[in-house]
Amino acid sequence: MTDTVKLRGRSSAEKRRPSVFWILAGLVLPIWALMTRYRYTPESKIPLEGPFILAPNHYSEIDPIAMGVATWRLGRVPRFMAKASLFKIPVFGWLLRKSGQIPVERQGSARSAESKNNPMGAANQLIEQRAGVIVYPEGTLTRDPDLWPMRGKGGAIRLALESGIPLIPVAHWGTQELMPRYAKRIHPFPRKTIHVSVGEPLDLSKFAGKPLDQKTVNEATMMLMNEITALLEGLRGEKAPAERWDPSKHQQTETGRF
Image (cartoon, rainbow, N blue to C red; front, side, top):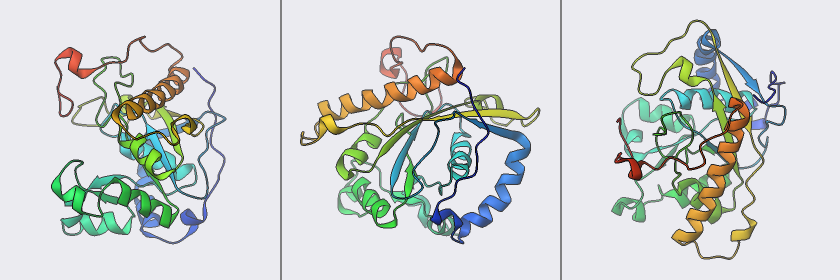
């Protein structure tokens, strides 16, 4: 397993600025700290200024909280892309808006094409606010039986290529001990260790000037998933399977439980 260390404090201007995140952090972090401890690889860091896209692996339903806390401790405010319909729910929708979460319509829907709540609208919002967002390139929990990253989808890559926002691969390991995949409850004790490895921004220069067709998206997505898998190999201290898991080859649906 790659050597990991306790993170030294780094903080961006947006994190120091009073916001609803201060309230959320005050409520969540003390409870979360009773259940987890974090260890980061020595090279792990994210930009303290400017927009970025963080692309992690995904194997537990509690991963968004784990990555949200990791991002906060790395010095930035965590944001996710959420279904636009969620923003219409009383109170919850207000909390999403106030915490800077980004509404998007389902890709391919008629409303997505007409609405500002589409991936490019989200990218413009990130650029304007100089903010970051967490996007799961697998789109759902991995189907791989050993929790390795499975085949990726093109959402994170399209967002990065269309906007020029840095795309940063990241891997984490340990949340499956806190909440196994598809489990209905967490196992808070004994306290779990979550290991995090943040890579360098993905070099997408070879795709500059190329049409954003499916071939380009697939090739770039493969690069991203390879980087995430390599980071996870370092955390786990073992090699991933030579062939990445593809749900369609195993008669599995792309979404939902199985």
